Length: 172
Image (cartoon, rainbow, N blue to C red; front, side):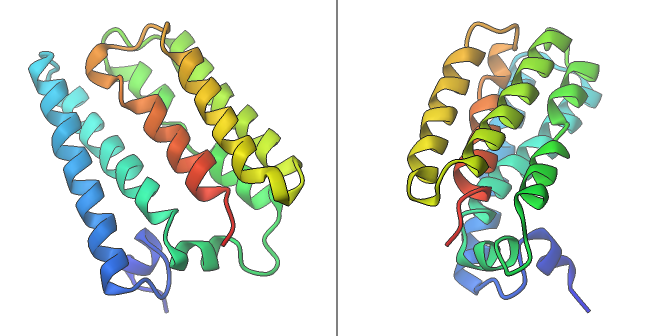
C-alpha cells in the first residue's frame, strides 16, 4: 500500500529528496502567494495560486529526484504515459478561470506549448532528448513572455515548463 508521500513524491524517496521537494514547494508557494497578494488578488485566486505554486515548484523538484526517475521511467512506461502526465496539467485553464488578467488565449498557448514541447521531447533520439527539452523550454518561455499573463504570475509558465519538459520527461 502506498503512502500519501509515495504519491506526492515517489516511492522510495530519501529523506534528503523529501526535504528538497518540500522546501521547494513551500518556498515557491510563499513567493507566488506573496506576489499575488501584493498584486491585489482576492481570496479565491490567492488560494488557487498557492495550490498551483505548491504543485509546480514542488513538482519541478520531485520530478528531478532519483526516486521519481525510477518511478516514472520504470519498465513498461511509454511515451503515452509521459504525454498523459503532461496533458493532465490543466492549471493554465484553472488560472484563466479565476485570475483577472490571465486570458484564455494565454492559457491555451501555455498548455499547447507544454504539450508540443513534450511531443517533440519524447520523439527525438535519447541522446538529444535533454538538449531538445532545453530548446523547447527556452523557446516556450520566450513565446509566453508577450502573452496576457499578470506580472504576479510571471513565474507560472517557466516553472510549468521546467517541471514537465526538463524534469519529468528526462529519464535517469
